[in-house]
Amino acid sequence: MKAITLCKHINKAFPKANAVTYDQWTGEEKVDKHRIWFRCEGECAPDGMPLHDYWKEWHPTGFHPKLQKLVEKHGFYLENHDAGTMMACSLDW
Image (cartoon, rainbow, N blue to C red):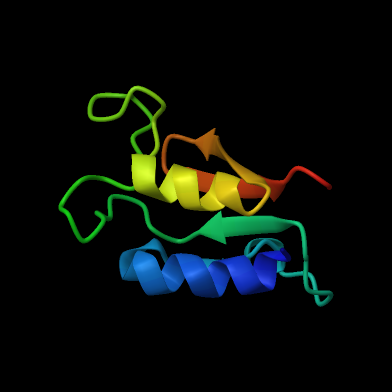
């Protein structure tokens, strides 16, 4: 699955995730099909749990478990860029 399609799935399940393709973070013109940027610093999932927990106070992995499961199901993985920025990358990238 490409990042564009996965962003749609993520934003439907987690509206406050504001998932967009990586090029929207870097300002590049070409759409990045392998990386996702989450514009969601401090935002929570519909269940009230944080989407991104850099300090791992709420989630042992640092990511909302259902979001992580969705991303991994489609061949991507979540990673911290910094304390306020979460990214996802394709395993095929």
